[in-house]
Length: 294
Image (cartoon, rainbow, N blue to C red):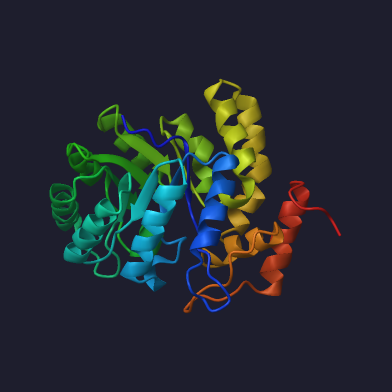
């Protein structure tokens, strides 16, 4: 079974004042995340603003974080081109990463048979552990249970990040895939429900600001302290939800700045959080005791 741990953070990409990638700040942020409970990092995923990064920038991020950070580095390489996804997977492999995350192709909306061929082609060419990523709210296509189950037979397709919000589908996948195939929630708010039906962990955005709390919540669940884990989950629901009050990663970058962790602005077509969003996040973090009240 792959050893990526229970709390994987989909990491933001820090930028400097000129909106160039700040690799030093990326290392600093990664170290903070690991200290607060992160067990692996997804780099250059959607939260990392991958649509705005160049291939060279992504490669430097992969190499830098792999060299400096002592947890598995999972490279986000998925695109809506199979050829380009394979090329990015091979670049990531040559950078020494520990695995790749491959999203369902977006915009061109392949059917289930096409999805099987797409992921099979990547698995056959890129000899790294692969995490599938199903996020129909962004891609326009839901990867159905039967498709995931068929793909789980590839020896290097080892995990799924599921952000479908469909617990019935998630249950079917867990029931019918090999025991060493790991299913991660792609929604922070569903971490405990997914664990409760046999999932393994979460690929998180909220762990940027509540990593310690999420680690405690997951530990309580694993120890059988179910009431406590539910209590913690309910306490964290406001921040889980408000980090997606507008397009990710706008809110999480604002929340990090409220924690005095400045990772810079965003590249267009995304822009900074409005004052209204910042105030909502400020109240959430104050309620959790993460930042002090004014």
